[in-house]
Amino acid sequence: MSTSFKPGQKYPTPTPGFGDRVFYETLHRQRPDSLMAKEWCLAYGVLSTKEASKLTKGSSSGGKSTKRASGGSASKSRLKAKVEQEAPADIGMSVGGADMVGSSAI
Image (tube, rainbow, N blue to C red; front, side):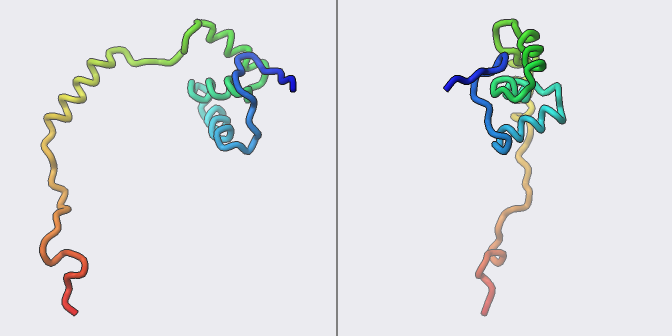
């Protein structure tokens, strides 16, 4: 069986009712800037040939084109410090003697 793939396609194109395909196509329609949707649709040949070749030309940097926030370790340490400073809160979920299930008189 000879299968011709579109530019950038790595896997066979799933059927239109396949759950992942529905999710990523919908995501791509609603948020065309979504990197996750673009990568999946490109890898599975869901995009048109024109759009796929445009994306492969645009991402010919060689590596993955994922975006990372700068200063990731600094922001993690700030978050950790903030969490350590917070005091545990009493949310009133303690169970008293008469509040238990099955403790009422018959």
